[in-house]
Image (cartoon, rainbow, N blue to C red):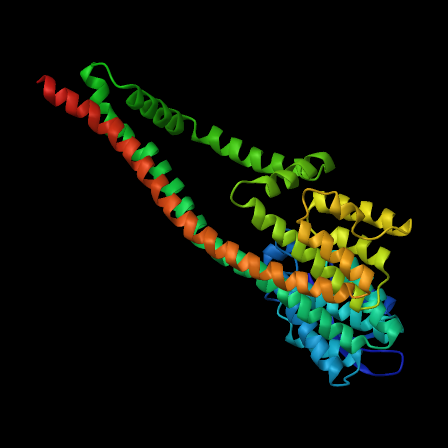
Length: 400
């Protein structure tokens, strides 16, 4: 459960926030462990039961984007970090993030660095965020790093939102097609085909398949439901295994239509993350290690980790990229030029901008291509179903 609290710190300052605990007594003990003196602890009456499940109790990417944007704005206005975090506690709607911000504010107020407080919440702030903030603290330019981090995270979110938005229409049509197909097979087809089976005549192969499929779905719908749930659960479990995950990610970039889009997305994540980390003052080998974890593909993760070894051995960053078929030639050559001329950050920025435009064009082309394909698929499905029912009826009427 979540509890709103008011307390005083060791210096007598009033502090408000949110703490997550199993009971009010546990919440009080948690506050005392932070060297806070509880004044009032109130359970949140509006807490949703869904928040007790981890599946629903998570911080969304958009919430993190807003968090970093607001924090960077207040930091740039010379507002102390602790005060900024206290303000964000009141402005944040997510109970999960509100609790985390409250804990971070207490830790920073107690003398911890912001990066150390972030590191204690790895499920929300991964190594990318922690190292960027740490570099800002070390260089004394935390406000600039937070602003740059907010810009980059916002660009990442906008890119993924644009792709998801473009796929909503095709996904909706395919989902509706599947639902209508199931309704037809379970409720409509059995009534139509009962007339045909009573005649005792020879039925076309398409009609026999349709009747068999409809009968199976009507009698064993529960088996199909178990199969679908089991398949989804099995896929999620399998993707956690490294060999399966690597094969899956390799297949994604080899798809005939969507492969190029996936490849460009991973390259953008690599170039944008590397550019952000290098501008934040993170050393090149360490920046590569962090980027390998956030790129989102096992194929590119292995490639980047091999690059880390090459860089540590004194070789150029582009050695592994040149020999990799998963990387466009332009990327490897521009990385080589950037490292040679000492302008790697500028080259990474240009590559990000170039491939971001390519992704925009690919998404537009995919939407234009997918819509007629869906219409053709719908036409074929309806045509096969109608032919399987109309043809035997026509034959029956002709024989009378």
